[in-house]
Amino acid sequence: MQTTLQTPVIISGTGLHTGSPARVTLRSAAAGTGVVFRRLDVTDRDPLVPALWDRVAQLPLNTRIVNAAGVSVSTIEHLMAALAGTGLRNAVVEIDGPEVPILDGSAAPWVQAILGAGLAVQDAPLEVIEILAPVEVRDGLASARLEPSPVPEMSFAIDFPDAAIGHQEKSLALSNGTFLRELCDSRTFCRQADVDMMRAKGLALGGTYLNAVVVDGARVLTPGGLRHPDEAVRHKMLDAFGDLYTAGAPILGRYVGRRSGHALTNRLLRALFAQPEAWRRVPCDPARLALLPGAGVRATDLADLPAVA
Image (cartoon, rainbow, N blue to C red; front, side):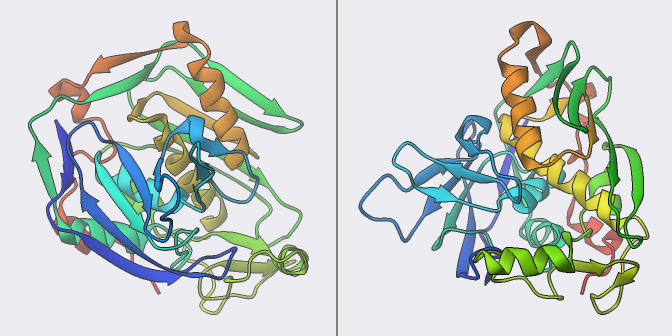
């Protein structure tokens, strides 16, 4: 079955890269709509931007979608992860600016708001994308891969020279609310040197120690430190989870990322859909539905969410 929101969700905040304020309203949508962004501040062109893999502009720092009229919405990955993790299939995302607010740098505020609003079950069948054969893309030492798996899974590894991050790897089966418990509160991270470089280029204008984990060598500069010892790799998994939801349906398979990022995950989806023998859409029967990340997640799970700043 498909799902939409019972009541609207309204959240305001500042964009990480533009520093622009924005108000976001998540509204219910008819079955089969998927996730569609509507730019309320755009009146001279088509303001609708579907959150789909073939509308993604491949950028290293965030996920930005663009429609045929050139209207875009950036930094959608944390919101998309929250939608996937709560099992929300159909929504119109109204936004009055070009960038989704960064909030605390994680997906937890979106998850809390969505679960608080509640989901409505729609009388329409749900399809999933089943991975039938391995598909992989590479860029130097970085790689992203999708392979068959009876359950949705993810494995990720990162390597950074800063001792505060270093080498981290993690593997998770993503059924039964794992995203909420293990990933949703993990914040975006960066090195202080990267912050200085980005700001010199007019980027990360909305970044603060309150919405990102900033490290400098072995030091964590963000007050309060880390929410998890391996928060960095957990956040990379969160990003990939959100980016994969631009496939247009839940993916039943295993994602393996090695130093990969937004652009490489989008390249992976493009490679997947260019190989029709590597995937198929299948009806989501009760057995498959029970395996999906949002299955069984309800407002009562708010109590299980980690505390967020």
